[in-house]
Image 1 (cartoon, rainbow, N blue to C red):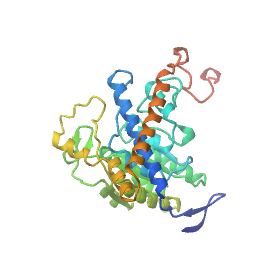
Image 2 (cartoon, rainbow, N blue to C red; image 1 turned 180 degrees about the vertical axis):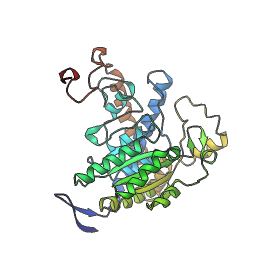
Image 3 (cartoon, rainbow, N blue to C red; image 1 turned 90 degrees about the vertical axis):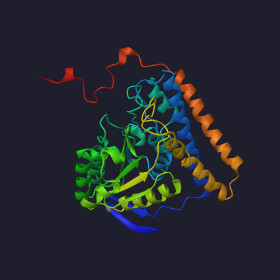
Image 4 (cartoon, helix red, strand yellow; image 1 turned 135 degrees about the vertical axis):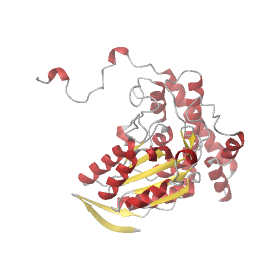
Length: 345
């Protein structure tokens, strides 16, 4: 239902309530879940073989958060990810081959091989990347939201972060300013229960991250982040509110990472029983059961999953065949301003 026109500078925007997804929409999102799962499986495999530089961090088991939120975004909306951000980037629509090539450090990667796993940027698609500091992406997202607001644009900003980031002062500073200035930014906390290797109970006396929003007067909600239906619905409502100019919102998604903190993490801090229980909460299997209950044949869903797998495997093969950057270009793309030699003084 339309809420009427809203003026933003010279731009007039009509904000509509998010439409209920069709069965085709759910199938498309099911494919997106498998695309991310397969993509990260290949990252894990090649990292273990020494082909991926650095320490990639996987979001295996958390895919529903990325897909459910990003389903409501446009190319003009800006997204700020975290060190566990492959899924966010793919869900926003970045090219699979170019994203994998970036992780491998290839010249045809999204950042020409300069960023790697933890610093994927796709400006043309609104993915403005992560930082090397936990919580450092939060004020950047607020800044992008302020820029859109100041320019009278209808776009919003979304930032993903883990529960560990709430222990940083910059989280509270950013939330405070976002509320004061009614910035169109959605804070999405992927609360997987661990800040690196430390459980939430060990590092915080506040059980739910959504509780942090209350003192600042920001609306917030804690939801089941492994249920795509719930994530999609709640994110849609929150984003519709942002587009109406209601100000920021914090969406805490309780989820679970099936993999370690980084590839190679032995996970000695988690019991076998806990890891087994986590696998039973797989968001892909949950959506599959829902679609079967709605009459979709399991064979059709298996085909969708296999098609997504083949898409990723072909993209990975092309990315691996691409050349690394020419060492002579190491100083290229460092500055976007004119060469320093051309500046007097």
